[in-house]
Length: 277
Image (tube, rainbow, N blue to C red; front, side, top):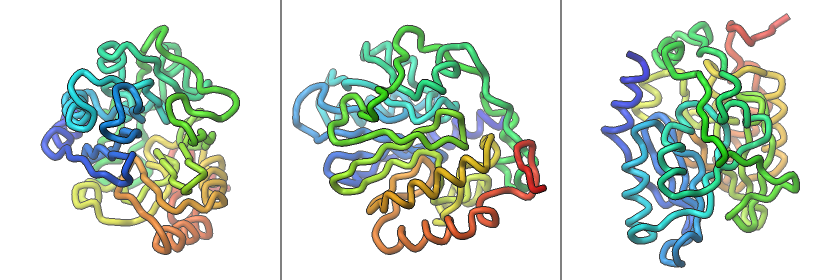
């Protein structure tokens, strides 16, 4: 029931937003993905970061054709981590495009059929999304030989000028992507700009900076350290996987607030992975 509702909401309200000249954010209501690459620069000079839900592939393909032309394919697919709302269309798209799928080495077991994530924890919040979370897919997928670990030097294949940053907490091998020249940050699930546990907040996209989605976060100490590390990078523009982009002084103030009050703003009162001793 929960996953069908999530898929239905995504299908009804998919949209795109050009956040920068070379970044198109694909919005599937409950999650975002990104196409990174300047339009009209030629075939394969772009990358897809995350792939949304299982029913997101058609919209992604439509957005690609509109932006780059018919039959265009990326250099690669980059996964920030392996949760169901980020890898839903990856097998279909990777097979169609015949491209590698990159993720952190610690995420490899989750995208090659070797290890499952924990079941979503409804105890973290009274919000409807949190309550539905045990019904969300949590078993591993298998992209097979296409799965490749991100380069150890921090570079991101197909994304010149970007680097990947290991930001564990939400998952073991969660990564964010950062471009140093203009301090643009693809934050994935390291933190959000919407209260992801609440269905009403998700539907209205009510702006509220918070930590990672609590019902799937496994290590809150690591999650806090990751947010602090990202704040030290002084991002000028953040594109989260959940919520709307945030930039400038507003971003600076909100991130400072989250860093100072992470325990109160992000960590739930209770849950399987919460340690308040």
